Image (cartoon, rainbow, N blue to C red; front, side, top):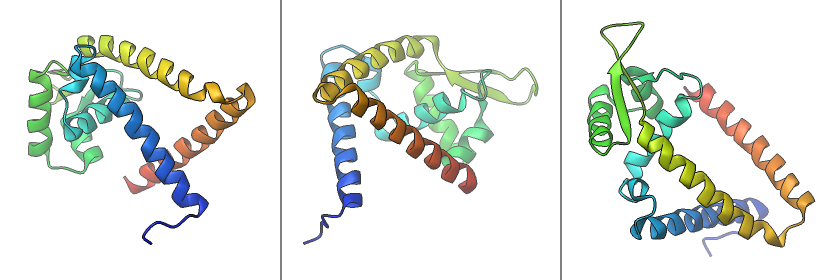
Length: 161
């Protein structure tokens, strides 16, 4: 059998199942008109969008194409092409860099930030429903474990970059 039953296999398997469940429920809602911008994104486009979104935590004025292509491990041309598509969809915006007039900054559009508020509310409610079977202590423990894993993944990513 290709699947082992050890705890690490179950951890990634259940994690992927839950992520797929949440993505699929969002996609179903997007198909009904809710969160249309997210439903129209391909996996690759959503990866570029998420990279810009997370990078903006550290770079509030936006990220340069060079920074983004390094993060995505793609060429500047391929990254620029994807940004063009996302800009046409209203997901990202380009604007002149204040520090280097030769550079262009990229950030998440105001319209997309409005959609993110809806996504946050949507996922918050879905996760609340899913975790209703857990005690508050179990939810707190789960959050603590996810935070540790998140920090470790960030550290691994940082060392890789």
